[in-house]
Image 1 (cartoon, rainbow, N blue to C red):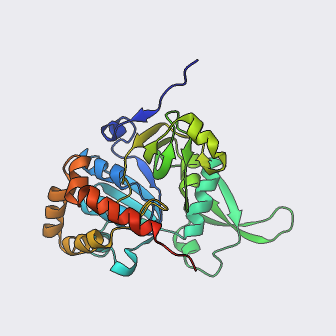
Image 2 (tube, one colour):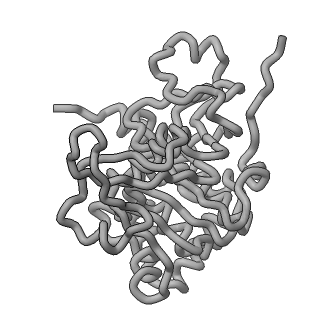
Length: 298
């Protein structure tokens, strides 16, 4: 008996992600974002997306700058020590991008509700915040039917598609994540369709050797794509660190729409293998992998 393969190529994402979809983007801060898929969305000219992120960074900034989004749901978007996300800031402050800013915990609870096929889930907060007043479509004040305690109901979030990047998977879609998984697991449970890019596709026997690393089972995956360095320029712990040299270059390019367009032309609007060559190829990948190996935890 053979098991159906879910292995696809980057160019196949158009079979799942459609114009106008709500897309949950995995990763957090400058780690674990599905950057190869993000670049392919831009190459494929997929538009009018609603992106859903908890802690976004260059992934969201790229999608905003490339004109792929018609709306953004977020808790936080930042380039960390490298500064504010330039395209994101321009879009919010000057270009009128519609957005839904809600707390990170509310996004997580909303995704958990979606994954459990519930209309909402309750939690203690955010009392005292104007978010409840200004975002009634996401927050409702309720009372516990058992104790009478005042609670907040967070509405379910059900993305059309979730995209994440992980360490490895087998051809059937069993996905292993090393390091932090952020909200990737919650996104995958809640979404209607799911795409995972991975550093490598391995045999089912390899997956079974370390079953505790399997965070996402095959029945929650619709497509798996082998994309080495697929989180670049973000980190993919413990395989490689984020690329500070490239991120600094990105920040300079994203400072204006004109120079950002040059960045897109040079790095993004080409096949993924050309992107990897342009950022330094095997040499740069080796540096980032070596730095990850040399990290010391105190």
